Length: 326
Image 1 (cartoon, rainbow, N blue to C red):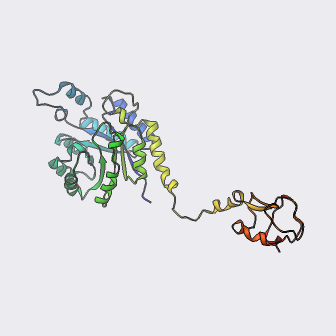
Image 2 (image 1 turned 180 degrees about the vertical axis):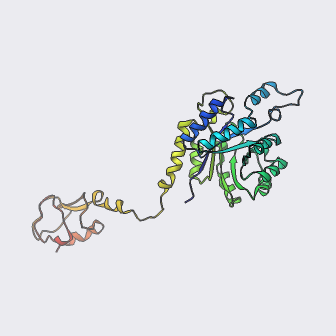
Image 3 (image 1 turned 45 degrees about the horizontal axis):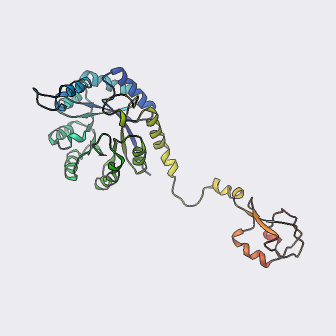
C-alpha cells in the first residue's frame, strides 16, 4: 500500500490579518497532525477588480490587510522551521515570486487561477524545488502544458474545483483518479473546498498522495474561507484517520490471522448431547444439538452421525467427539 497521504493545512488568508493568530494557526495545525501549512502571497492590486483608477476599494482593502511582505514571509518560514512543519506559499504574480527569492524559499504552489499563467510557471520552474500544481477550472490541455514545464520538479498535482464552497455533487473526486492515471509519474491529490470533512476522508481512501484542506481556528469567523475550512478538531480527525488507514486496510490476505483462528474455539459450535444417550443408542436430531464452544467434532460433516451409534454412555450437556461414534 502507498505511504500516508501528505496533509497540507491551507491557512491562506484565515489569519484575519493578525500575526498572532497566524502563529496560533501554525501551532494548531502541527498539533492536529498536519505535515505542512500553506499561505498566499499576492500583490493586492492584481486581485482587485478594475484598473488602478477604478479598483474595487473594499476588495483591495481586504487583500491589503491579508498581504504578506518579505519580512513577514521570512518570519513565517523561521517559525515553521521552529515548529518542525513544512511550509508552502501560493503565489499569484511576479512580485510574490520575488519575495520567495529574497527569503530563499523553494516550496511553491501554483494556484488554480494561475494555471494558464505560463510565464509565471516557467519562472517558478527555474527557482522552485517542490511544486504543488492546482488544477481548478483547468482543461487537460492546460494541465498537461503546466506539467510539462514543471516535470523536472518534485511535483504534486491537485484535483481542485474552484467553487467556494464546492457542493458535493460538484466535487467529482473521480477526476482525481483520472489525473492519477494520466500523470502516473507524479503525486496526485485533492484540494478540498467542500464544507465538512467527508470529501477529504474519501480522497484519502481513494489514494490521494496529498490533501489540502483550508484551516481555521473557528469556522464561524467572518471571511471568505472559514466555512469551508477544517478546525483543529476536524483536522485531527482527518490526520488520525490518515494515520490508521493502513492498519484498517490490512494486507488483503484471505486467511484469518492466528488470533482470529484461536477465536474459533469460542465462537464456533460443537456437537453436544441434548439428553442422556445410552451406549449403542442411535444419534438422532432429538438427542443431539449444536452449541458453543467448538469441540473436535467437524460440524460440517454432521450428517454422518445419523448413521452411527454411541460407543459409550453420554450424559446430557456433554461433548460428543468423533471417538464416541461406532
